[in-house]
Length: 490
Image (cartoon, rainbow, N blue to C red; front, side, top):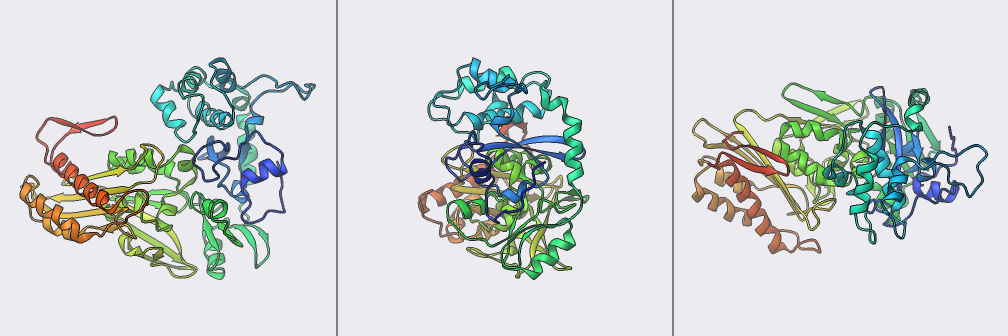
């Protein structure tokens, strides 16, 4: 166990590893969680089981890893006690496979690939295929080797039962990590500059109410860039990672409540059960490293006009719960966003949870993400579409929400009104909705997409949703790898 007392609020895990521990196998490259060269693996006990997840150390704050096992590329090989400094020891199966398959050239990206594949190796005893590997390494970029030998190495190493020294000491590691969860608050610093990790929700709410100028972090996948790219001085950091119960997902009967500590990774199966379009959206949302750290409520709270989840949750009719001190208030999620960078949140008030309804039998949903790069890229346009039908297949309610079209995630209210009352197969009313979109939005015009491209794409995505829901063929591919019978209300 390592104890660190002199922790600056914004010190990153990458800086600690390279500059203090001199663990230079972990590389510094993009410093924005994009390339994966800095990937390390965190071991934590979740629901009584030790799990390993790859994360981007460049945008993870040092204080956030409290209570976790940190593994870098230097930790994987097995070394004899009497080994000399030039003896690499016995390589881990993942490392050996990368050597055998000639999967490294310049080697700068290799440590990150090793750690991502180590996490895959530890994730399951089930066989993996090429598509699975490609998804696991989507957050690791290589400029010179090409990905085929890397994938070949993963297929060789990660198929079959886990068999390494980490498996052998799994119970011992889990026991040690569980011991570290002592229910005490962590506070490093003073009243003017601190890193804090409260252990209870009451303690969190009280601390934030007393320090409304503090920055709340859950995964820090956005705040980390404030530190590494914008060079912001954030003197007060409050981390949510230690708060008991804040990582819960509650089944509330007609939907799910996801609390502020629920990561994107853990949310995928729950939101996918509402509609498979959401699962595919989240798979493309970012890399596994980002999804293992970033949270659903964090994506909501940062208020980005190009965030992918807010339009989805707005279209589904989600409600947001906020807390300030002991007081709670709930609002429709769409009411949370006021203007660019402005949300309906009082000083000292934190986003506590979001409640997402299930779809009824007569309700349908579609969502689509358009970006320059298929995986791990910010959307140019994101469209989410909800419809409720009567027995005659007439649209009795519609919520059409877009990201990337305005300074906030925003509904297309004129287009909704044009569709309500129409039969889903009435293409004349579709045309009215397409025309209304031009009254709903004066789109952003920036380096990701022109205003003209965005309005044409918004038109096309709504058309795609309507065509799919009005389809007459026996089946249609909705999302990658998912086929279903096409029928209105399904």
